[in-house]
Image (tube, rainbow, N blue to C red; front, side, top):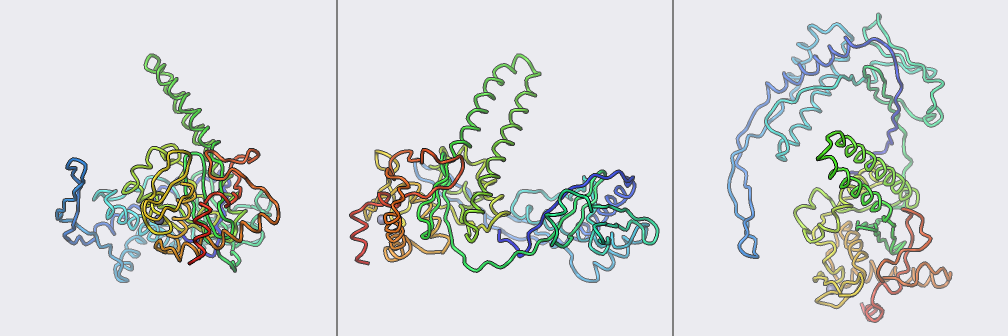
Length: 450
Ligand SMILES: [Zn+2]
């Protein structure tokens, strides 16, 4: 999910042009393009190795089997595309550039179907175009003096949109106009905004927990974001849902109440996530943010499942919105909170508090900090080793800690114990934690040998 060198801004404006017929025939054209490409797909049989897991007592055993699969090859040759274009043009009465737009859209529909098909998420069924929309390419409109003129039929029919008094005019002053999407009652206008090159980059590894989002970077140390508000939103609605559910078995009309609450819950949590990600992007503008790849989550870390249930639904959203507002790198989530970042050993939970201890080398640190350090190390592709750990984690932390002591800024003194949130920490704002006390002091001193 790397960001391109453009930011895309998009705005909607309403219109009352009568373009129903045009949109219908475009939809028909697009479906025809999809049909024709579909009919020319070549299916190749391939053997694939699959596995399934069976349990034998406590052990899990992988069994392998071979399956025949049909792999689709989408025709892409120049001759095919030319023939496709010619036959689509035959009974198309509007501007011919729409045919090119339809071909491009048809390919992107089929390519996305193919990606999902290969992952096993979609069947061998032809995609059907349902929504009425037209992607208007740059060759089909003119943009002058804040007026957009879209060609429907060359020399004959145009649509005009005046955006000189639109509310977003100031925001898009030095942007280029991008693709337009025409719908029955609105026009979606996209603008491209070139981004200036960033000079420095730093990595921050993030670990999501039930009540907190914990980040680690050598520059800032341990960053903690309070997520209790988000948890609270879900909790409140869970209670309401349960109440409504117990009543709705008697009264069916209450079912709408449940769905209303679901919508409100989603809106409220989305709003929170928006604010949170904006804040992070603003606070760490040069950072590449590392997150666990949730698509791979199901494969590992079953143990963590319970803690994540509530937060999980927001996790994807946080990563998604963060990738719009900043740069994001995904890492394999395997054992991020149970591996020792120093020696690669297994971290065991200590009875009291949030601390974990390595069963091999004895490194003791906060469980959540451990997770984010591991994400950080994975972003670089480092495997746990004492020298890396010293160079990447301990050394910068010591200097950071000295700076904080000199400044006398007591961020928090209770580091590592239970819920050590700052009392004045506003909702969802990142705050820096004092690294002192998070890592076992004796070990810190002995680390200097490396
Ligand atoms: Zn260890």
